[in-house]
Every structure is written in structure tokens, then in C-alpha cells.
Image (cartoon, rainbow over all chains, first blue to last red; front, side):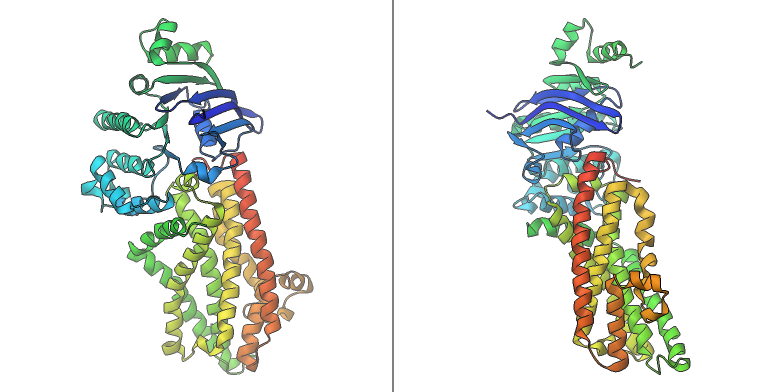
Length: 244
Length: 263
């Protein structure tokens, strides 16, 4: 059986800096896997390699049993990504952006899809507005619509609720839970928001200095380290690894 | 190649132009100013220069042809720079697009952008200066095509640099054409250049294109050998440009410049 995602001894070195050091993990079907760690621990580099934006120095990435290095375009059809650090063209309207990305992802019956997304993500009133003129919460919903326009089997999220107000953040989290259940999708969530990770993730990877220093379901990690919540686990592990 | 996906990339830039009157005016403004300026200069030369011998159209035609080269190259660069400025670069490269689909889509989009700017300027030459570039006849199409190919080739070289080195390469994107302009012998024959520069100039298709444009206008003759040689050189540089684009993409994936590319 091929897993949605299998990472085997993956490493990335930039000149003399080892950003990711021989990590291995598996993402199961229907799973939301959290990746936690301080800034610079290798989360974004790992996601970049999964998305084919970065070439691994060593190791393998298998997506549904196929190597991204060999079948990049075919695999990218099954993936999508959202990050507050990556934006959609600001001068285009919401509808134009969705049309463009729908075409780029080869979405069939695009108008119906846009209608569905606009209903699902409450975009109706802003469809004809310029994307750059939206509030950050609205922009986030548009990015979310783009990220699921191709019904990705694997969705990668890099701090999806960073800089959002609590209500919008909660809305996004609920939407992701619903989407994962409805589409049976597998999700990777890199986040600094520990309560978000505890709520959404069935399993968590703790990273530090490019290595996986612990992993498991959030509750198990909390019990194993004798702490009250994931935030305390995060702090404990990072202090042990001389991060603070 | 998937035409629908390439159309998607075209739409991204078409919507951008369509939705902004200042952008459209900007596209038209510079070629028009350029043509008007060279129109007056050529009017002056046609009266006072023996070489141009009352052929008012020579300089002006060469100016229009050079603008075709300039616009197609800048348009190609702009399509990439727009992605960097809007922090959309990552989204583009995680979309399931083959590199050749990106290249073809940008080549076509660059043509549309160039024509939006050039057509009004070309139309102005007739009422303002009594000159029609169409006088060149069928060879005009070949000259335009040749310049367009070289323009997008230069665009490919610059975009390779943008992919490989990031936004810091932007200044080179703007200055690349000004570097080649003196060697292109746009308004003068190659003999004007010192020997060493002649050697470099002969390796560029521009010399043959502009030489031929002047030949047609001054002597009313077409030397297809010049055009053929320009196309061979164009083909060589285009293949190099595409190759470099692929290599830059591979290098950028190793170096990490595709991630978080933005100003």
C-alpha cells in the first residue's frame, strides 16, 4: 500500500548549513500531521522539498508511491499549499484569481467550482473585489479557496492562521476539519499555534535544528513529557535542545 | 503541453492589463514617445544627411523595429517581475505546470503586451510623418518575427537570472537591452564600430536584421541571406536561452531561491 506521503532520510544542506538532517516520517490517509518547532528548525524547508520547490540533498520523497523528483507535474496536481507569506496577485479580482488558478490546475467545470467555493467560504460578496483591497481575513479565505480548488489529496499549510483575529482563525480551523473529513484528505500543518495543533492534528512531529526530536499524537506527547499541554511540551523540548 | 493551463497563465496577465487603464496607457506611452522623438530626428537627418538622402523613413523604421525588440524583451521580463512583486512566485511554481508550458505561455503573452504598445505608435507614423512601415512589405513580417524571437530570448536570459539570483537581478533586467543597443547597429552600418566590437556585433542577429531593413529602404532590394542568417543565429540563442532557463530552475531548487521569492 502506498502512503499519501513518505519521507525517507530526507536532508537539505545549503553550503555549510544543514537545514534538514536525515528525517523520516509518513503521512497517512485522512491524517492531519502537525510539524512544530522554533523558527529556522527546518519546517518550511521540509514543506518546500515536498512541494518540489527545493531539491533535497539526500533522501527520498514519495507521494502516493511516486518520487516528486521524477514526476513533479503529475504529483503537483494532487497537492496544494497555503501560507500567509505567499500571496495571490493583488490587482486581480477574487474571481479572476480563482479562474486563473482553476485553469492552472486543470479544474473541470470551473464556473461551478468557483460557485461552490464562494458559497463554502463565504466569498459571494467579495468575488468581484480586487484581492489586494481585502481585509487579511478575507484574503485568507480567498487563499484557502485557491488551495482547495483542485481538491488536493494532500494539503500543506504553513502557519495558515498567523496574524488572523481569533474568530477568523477559528473559522479557518473549522473549515479545515470539515474539509479533511469530507474529502478524506491528508494535511500537513506547520504552525506555532499550539492550541491549533492540539485541536486539529492526530499526530505531531517536533523539529529542532533540522531534526525530528519527538513525534506522536498530541495527547501522548503531553503525557509522555508530564506536561499540561503542547505549549509546555514545546517549551520543554526546545529548552532541552538549547534553543532558549 | 496543456493549452488550458497555458491559457490560465495568459489570463493572469491579461486580467492585470485589462483591469488597469494606467497600465494600458503606460504600455502605449513609451513606444509612442520613442517614435515621435525619432520621427523628428529622422526628419532632420533626411534633410541634412547625404547617407539618408531624403529617405525620412529609414531612422524611423529602424526605431520602430528596435522598439519591437525592446518591448518583447521587457514584456517577457515584466511577466516574471510581476510575479515577484506580487509575492506570487511560489504559487506559480507549485502549480502543475511544465517549464515548457510556462515558457510558451509567457512568449505568447509577451507578444500581446508588445503589440498593445506598438500598434498605436506605428499607426501614428503615417499621419505625423507621412511614413508607413508597411512599405517594407512581406520582409517586414520576417524582420518583426526575428526581432521578437531575439527579444524573448533576451527575456529568457534575464528571467533565468531572476530565478537563479532572485530580485537582486532586477536591475540587469532593465539594463540588458541598453547594453546590446550600441552593438546592434540599429541606426548605422557595422563599419562604424571599432574592429573588436564589429567582431562581437557580427555574432548577434541584430546587425543582420537592421542592415537588411536599411537595405530594403535605401536600395529597394531584399537580401534573404541576411534574414536567413539572422534566423539561424536567433535559433541558436533561443535554444541557449531555453537551456539556461531549465538550468537556472534546477540551480534555484538547489539553492532555494524559489521559496519566499519577493521584494
